[in-house]
Amino acid sequence: MKENVYPIEDECCVSPSSERKSHHSEAVKKNLTTRLNRIEGQIRGIKGLIEKDTYCDDVITQIAATQSALNGVAKILLEGHMKNCVVDRLNEGDTEVIDEVLVTIQKLIKK
Image (cartoon, rainbow, N blue to C red; front, side, top):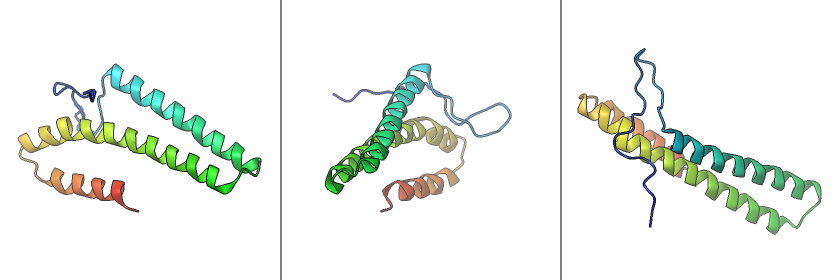
């Protein structure tokens, strides 16, 4: 069962100074930080594999796993952005956010 890391009531991308910022809950920040720390370790591991002249296919497998982990972080951020920032901006009548999200999704799926 998929965990909903972004309850609807979290605020995102809103700041009193009109500066665009995210406001993630402490639980979400901890989740993202843990994932990014793990990814950082994977990157160091890949570097070590290359330094040890590890078989190319094994290195590529580790790169694929790291890319998948980064995609997981992006999915969590995109979910929160859609459920909070985008909804808020649409409710304020700002339809330009749709184009912004489409560009963001294009970046994520670009190969």
